[in-house]
Image (cartoon, one colour):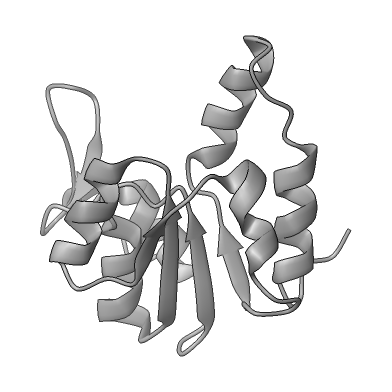
Amino acid sequence: MSTLSRAAINVSANGIARATGGARVDLVLVAEMVERGAKVLDVGCGDGELLRILSETRDVDGRGIELSREGVNECVAKGLAVIQGDADTDLGNYPDDAFDYVILSQTLQAQFSAVLAGVRTPEAALASIRRAAATLEA
């Protein structure tokens, strides 16, 4: 059961729902699904907000991979363990069963947009994610 209530959610002018304290509601809900102390990889971690929430509220061993240099720099400045990389090619560098959770909070939407544009295919990235996640079921 989520700890969020309607009173604790505010919607900004740009339509982003935020919980009391400023965190995005979708990220708070994702974080609540992760077991405490888990090993987590956040693929396409952006500015690291989910990794920060997980670290502060779930005591996870969190890692991130982010395509943009700006996102990586922002994460590193926050003390988060993030590397610059491409999900399509760099996820293969992680060992089998290295993480309890591999999270793609918005990465699949970006992948799907690129697929529709004919720029990429997600099969390789999804296969690497399946291999790196310890408990992912087909």
